[in-house]
Length: 81
Image (cartoon, rainbow, N blue to C red; front, side, top):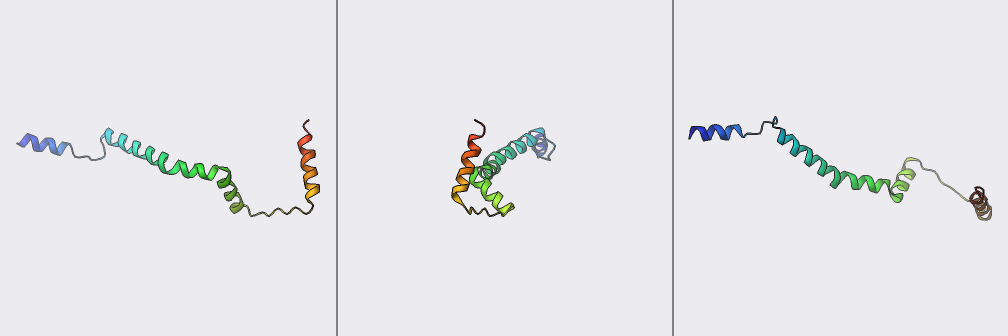
């Protein structure tokens, strides 16, 4: 009976067990993949990135002459040819 109690006391997790550190690492990776990475991906997608950039750098673009704007785009697109 005394040996069983001593064995039970030895099983107590005091944080020095390597297996407990492995479990903590697995849980951290799971948290990373399930919770943090989708949020990061959403931020880096086009709509999320555009929202971030307009929040970080509030710039308004106003086209005063649409025909001139279109012509400049055509010239810029044809320049490498």
